Amino acid sequence: MDDVDRLYPGHSFYLEDKKMKLSESTNVAMPVRNLISIIAAVSIGVWAFFGLQEKLNKHSTKLEIMGKDLVMNSEFRIKWPRGLLGSLPADSEQFMLIEELYKQTDKQQERIDDMLHNDVNIQALEKAVDKLQKDVEKLKDKQRTFSNGNGND
Image 1 (cartoon, rainbow, N blue to C red):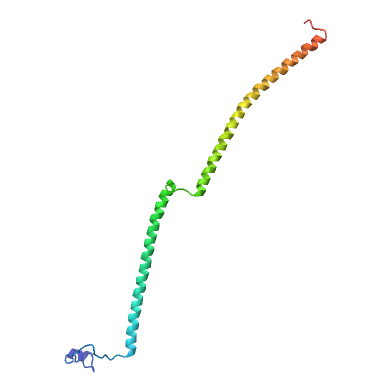
Image 2: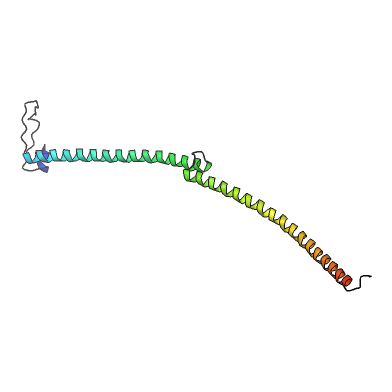
């Protein structure tokens, strides 16, 4: 004990002689300020622990939800272009309009093809009309010469 007396002069530590006995009826003398400080420190510690626990739970839940969304997004990203998830009503309407446009285009193409045949026919008829006009002119010339008295030729 000499070392303790030398380190802390003026204080005497004689714990060997005094044994502390605790029981349910043991009174503890403590300043109220210290008791309130201990209670406040424990309360803050408990509050901080449960605050951290709550934050961890929120983040864990958010991660699980994001993971499920990621799986659903990946599934959507793969299956939608392949047409495995159906189509939107607007897409179906567009497909019907495109089909109708194809039908109209086919009809117009048929009419254009028919017009090409008409062009050939028109050219042939123009040649025939030209020949007929020449023949009519020849006949008129013959009629004129016949009427003028040169009918013996």
